Image (cartoon, rainbow, N blue to C red; front, side, top):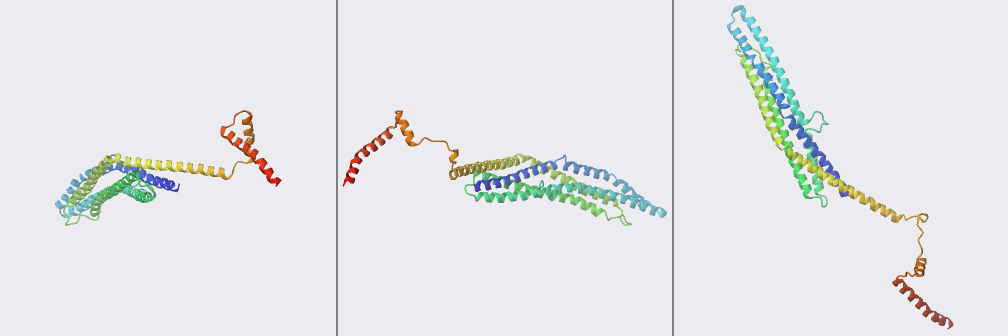
Length: 325
């Protein structure tokens, strides 16, 4: 029964890992859709598009500095610096909002807490453990069955998917980092005497940030489409894992019941029924006598009894003769 218990334990652990990963992939698929990550990325791109309209205002401030003469130069430069600083603040706000999208994406990989099991990294670890459990099962006597082989194929398939999705989400986080780096590079700059086009810097920075958002959104859509197309396959793997686990559990319960019944039988043999609890049984002699009186004697018994009587009659005189000598 030890084999049944171990098999049930390991298949249960595998089923838990597979169903957790199935739930994780379903969650990641939803998060990458237009209703979640797509909406967030689109909203931030639109905000930057609105901010881009201010490039004309900054350009006008540049032109004012170039046209200014005498006492008007200093106020014109101060106005340009003030306008430029305002846009620097706007750019940093947009960078922070991109960072919030990165946090959502990173949560798909690493979870929101160290104990979070509904994330790609935890799923990869769970599947790695499932593969080790499968290796143990395959070394058990008579356990390397077709069902177990199919279970291994399913676990390996999910492990490949989880690793690939984790890598692609990491790339998306990196794409957004490119946009945030552009914002960072814009922050320390300031329009100087020889810097005639701060508006061009603003326009270029906004363009780089929007490009990173739009590229990430397209990437998320493709990944969402790929995962959605494979969702039925993920479900089949999970269903098979649960079926194997349920079958192993039923086998274990059956073996346990048989062992209990055998133990009961052994105990009954070692500890027979007490005399006070026994039912009275008619003795063999009484039974035979009753049967003969009723005329119901088995022919084999009648023959045996007749032979004994004849043997007794013949043996009597011999014994007497022996004693006589």
